[in-house]
Amino acid sequence: MKALTLNGYDGLASLRFDEVSTPMPGPNDLLVKVNAASVNPVDTKIAHGYGGPSAQRSLPHVLGRDSAGTVEKVGSAVTGFKVGDEVYGVADPARWGTFAEYVIMPAATTAERPAGLSDIEAGSIPIAGLSAWAGIVTAGQLQRGQRVLIHAGAGGVGTFAVQLAKNIGATVAATASGKNAEFVRSLGADHVIDYTKEDFSTAIKDVDLVFDLIGGDVRFRSFPVLKSGGVITHISVPPMTQPPPRSDVEVRPAQVKYDTALLDQIGALVKSKAVRPVVSEVFAFADALKAFQHVMTGHARGKVMLDMTR
Ligand SMILES: NC(=O)c1ccc[n+]([C@@H]2O[C@H](COP(=O)([O-])OP(=O)(O)OC[C@H]3O[C@@H](n4cnc5c(N)ncnc54)[C@H](OP(=O)(O)O)[C@@H]3O)[C@@H](O)[C@H]2O)c1
Image (tube, rainbow, N blue to C red; front, side):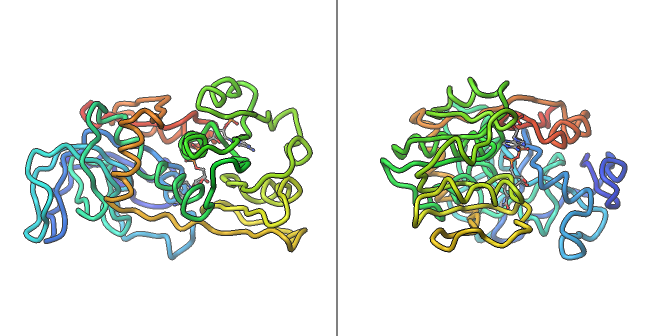
């Protein structure tokens, strides 16, 4: 099969298209023909050696976590899927990923593609949607009537987080640059703070939850906006370099859970139109490096997708 292989950790220079053997599914796996895959920041970070030796894979490796496609083979112990099913989900990072014609998907992290969604739309959901769920729902425990501030509301995770928070019934503030303010409002944000012009740390107060998708100094400057007892959740973004300036608020890492049941829950919200996937750019698989470059700007809007059929 054709695959984009990672052959070192020098960024884009380490990626090339190759012919490789199609992997065989184990008993609990599906072999999926990949129709759409998304490029997540983590793919670009791994290609640059981010995470040190523990994040390094045996090379060559195939990156890519999200996919939408068609089941081609079903592992002997799998129930609930059959050949020809249209699915979407998350590949196992320890094995080859979705930037290839075929991928092995664990059945436990795969779900039926929500009716009415294209492969491109469905493939944009898993990592970003499940990460937003972790930050807002599981770790954030956001409740109707509460106030939330979401950093990077225009990005892949942020676009889901803003919509999930609004659907819960919270008052939603988000940071974004001015060019994205109207867009983030259209997702349901009540208040968009243009971080390039305004200091968010004084623009808002009495917040119950901050979902931090930036980290470092942005997390440090988020403490003043919280009410006493408030919470900051974050996924793997750079840590603060300073000690926490307050002891009456909690910083809670969000553990992202990848499973079929959660994908079905998010799929149901998409089906009911409470949440919509936002895809800003679709690149042909042959142009995957351009997609990487776009994500690496740090200013992609919503999700950046690969059409694996082109
Ligand atoms: N499981 C995990 O651990 C996990 C999962 C998913 C993501 N992550 C991490 O979470 C972070 C966000 O992921 P993502 O997929 O949402 O990234 P992304 O889509 O690349 O985020 C891009 C967005 O960030 C916004 N942005 C950039 N700098 C900003 C700032 N200073 N303040 C506010 N917004 C800013 C940009 O908006 P403007 O163009 O308007 O500036 C852009 O829309 C990444 O570091 C990623 O690696 C971790």
